Structure formats: structure tokens, C-alpha cells
Amino acid sequence: MRNRRILLPCLVLLAAVAVAQSAGVLSPAETKIITPSHYFYAGQTAPVQMRNAAAFRSASGKVVIAALVDVSGYSSAVAEKYQGLLVTDGTINVGGKSLGPGSFGIGGTPDGKFVVTDIGANVVGTADFTNDADLKRPVPLKMAVDGNNVRLYLGKKYVTLTPETK
View 1 (tube, helix red, strand yellow):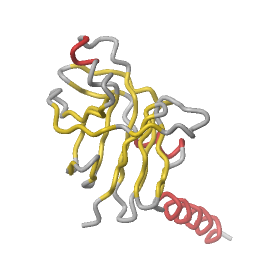
View 2 (cartoon, one colour):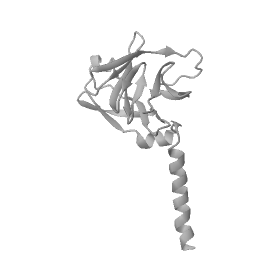
View 3 (cartoon, rainbow, N blue to C red):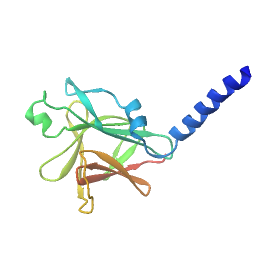
View 4 (tube, rainbow, N blue to C red):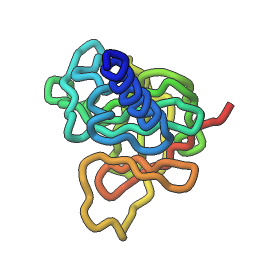
């Protein structure tokens, strides 16, 4: 009987780990566990909007997290190109630009560009947004699987993230 009490929780834990390690967009509960509550960027720390956070795990087990942050304390010049965070522990391709593991700021510009910056607010890459006219109920930020890629949506606009399989 004692062995059963030990064995059952271990089996449940192993099943949970196996589910958590599968490739694809993570559940809101899984995303909440791995997403930071605050994010350091350009010399300040801002709270992360957990309701506007998403994450995915690639087939190789690497994770990408994206979330919007409260940018009210930032200058308008910084807030113009920084609306959220992107954290990856693997290499991803964003609009033709390869990003290695690290922490980045993300945002959209009025002229339809997706901007990726380092945590010092320096632009490291841009990509064109694609407008998804068929999206019925846009939300501020979400991820959706698109074949071997993931679409990162900011409203009705998205960029494609492609995990590199090295």
C-alpha cells in the first residue's frame, strides 16, 4: 500500500512532464509558469500583462515566450517601438532575421513593421507584418501554429516565427 502512495504521484508527475514537453503552443497555465511577472528593458522594469502572454515549444524542446508589458513609464521614443517582450532559449527566424537565444523587446510601428530590439532598445531587426483579414476575434497578443511555424499576432497583424532545428 505504501508503494502505491508513492508510485501514483510519480506516475502523475511523469505524465504531466510528458505533456508539458510536447511541441506546440503552450496552454495559458503553462505560459503563466514560465513568463516573468516583470521585465527589464532600457534601464527600467515594467510589469508583464499575463493576460497578453503566449509561448510555444519547438519540436527540439526550445521555448519562445512573448508578452505585452505596461510601457507607461517609458519615454514616447522607447514606447513607440517597444510594446512587449520576446524571450527564447533557442534560435528562431523572424521575417528572415535569425535571432539567437536571448531576451528582446518587440513592437509594431505605424508604418506596419514588426520591430525587434535588444534590451538596451537598439533595433536588431524588422519584419513586415501580414494582416489576417479572416481573423474574427483579434486579441492584443496570441500565438497560433502554422505548419512548422508559429504566427505571433499583435491584433490582426502577425509575423511568422520559425524555430531553427540545429
